Amino acid sequence: MGLINMLKWKDYIVKNLDKKETWVVLTKFFAPFGIAGIVSLAIIWSDYLEIGGVMLSYFFPPTSLLGRLWAIPFGLRLGLNLWSAVGAVVFVDLVTSLFMVWNFDIIIKVPLLGGLILRSETKGHESLEKYPWIRGLAFLGIALFIAIPFNGTNAVIGAIIGRIIGMKPLYTWLSVSIGSILGCLLVAVPVYGAYLFIPI
Image (cartoon, rainbow, N blue to C red; front, side):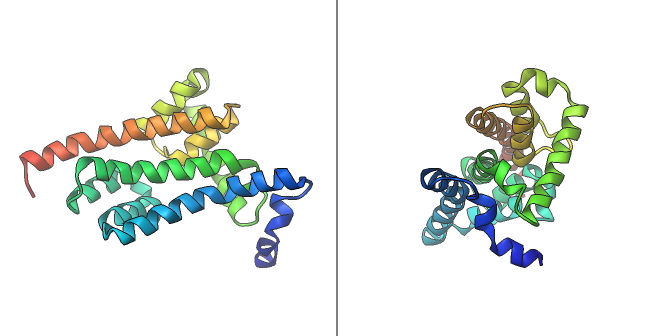
């Protein structure tokens, strides 16, 4: 039954919308997938598969549970330079957070996917209870939450927190992006320095 409902995506995405609004909603829904697809094809075409490996290891479990603490050292170990390793992880954060801030209200209604997002929303509420300063600092608070490796921090949770506290989608996405860049650099620079001085 769940599969049948999943196939009725139009009922969840474009219900009660006029034609113009429908195109805007569909563009926002599929644009992040398109961006990810184009970049993936470019990586395959350029034969720079190490970057793709870092992106996949950052996105999919079980290694995704360790986040950037795994993905960046893994990228450096594969021979990527500092900026390529950081860029691979930041790109995944940018695309996933863009999808979340644009489509949060829609995807919570989609069977299966909605359940996963609602669980992430619960984690977002728990993070707000644990770190109440995020709400007070808003833009800066989310950026710091993403940058500093607290338990359960990632771009999706950061985007959800931004929506929970009422930040506009653009500001939420920019805050998550800044936090992702800072957080990746906090991991990458010491690890890269260690690789330079202590070759493995």
